[in-house]
Length: 367
Image 1 (spheres, rainbow, N blue to C red):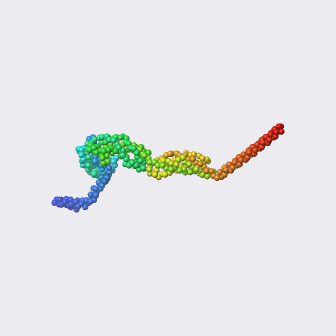
Image 2: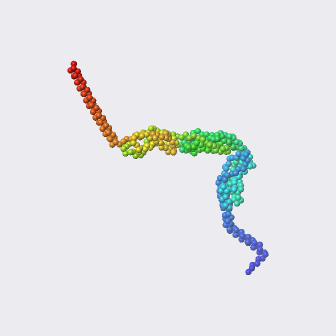
Image 3: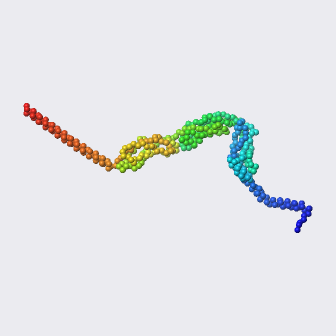
């Protein structure tokens, strides 16, 4: 059956249809909003985005602001968003346009440049304060300074010098008037005994010791330094090593010196009061002199590096008895020989006396 509408009913039908649609969208507005928002729910925060400052760098020197900002990116295109997050593939940049500004301090609004239309960006902070000065240049002597006269491992730092001795400083004309000295600051905790130089950044300081905004050419200088290594006198003593031969009861070891000087970090040498000298006695057969290197670790040095040790063996008693017996036998033999010699001499004397008596008797008879 076909339903026929009168012409007069058409406006009512349209109005009813419109109300029906309104009721439908009103009932489903929350779901619809969710659908729309789901297309733009990708967000990422990008930190340390550099600010590209646009100005006449030949005429002006700009300072007084942080060089990096954070940017929150959002959009439905996840691929494009990932591209802008990565510094290596990023197209957009943050710009501070100072091209229409002169000398003075200004508040400047930051903007993004070359950002994809599928993304939106929020910069934090949105504005920065910038100081613009007339650019000037001047050469200064560089003075090396230490954070401490002692390094973290106890080494004392001596005389310092820089190479080059002068640097060229570029800054604003008002800032230039504030410069009291130009220094190369050395972190003494990074110095070691085997170093002779270190790279240090150049800074310009005012009379209060505060760092000023400058550009230095070169940015770093070489600081040459001397290390004054702490020293200490310690005792030397012998240490017997090896097994004694079977016929040796003990040994006497005499070092040619009992003192040595060690040098190194204060924290290291403070723990050392004496050093043992190892002496090998395993092959000893008589008094010998040995030259021995003084043992050291890699943390300190020693002077002298070598000492001599005289080693004298003490033989066991059985050998001493044999030696004594041999000496006694030799003594008896010597005494026997001496007695025999004395008897012989006495006999010769007696014969001589007898002969003389006979001669005297013969002479008397003749007379």
